[in-house]
View 1 (cartoon, rainbow, N blue to C red):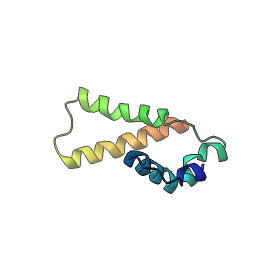
View 2: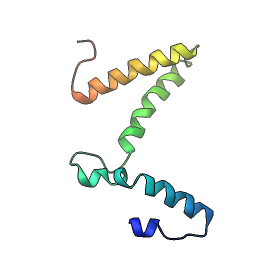
View 3: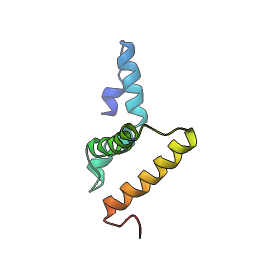
View 4: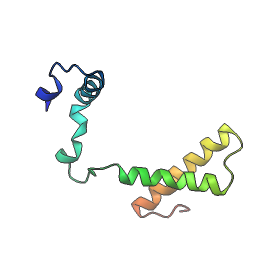
Length: 89
């Protein structure tokens, strides 16, 4: 992979993408090295839908601070849920 990414590409987009991939080469394939690491970001993307849905149904937060607080509460709630813990305990 490093050989392909180090080629002298001429297309600007390919040069940019190859450079980005070269910088992250150690972490791009973490899912291959470590058992339990998902190969896709679908789970993380699904997690983002929860606060967006709540924001849309409740009319959003009125202040930046309100958004910050809600984000923190939802993060703790979803983490508890993922780990099989009760949020209010």
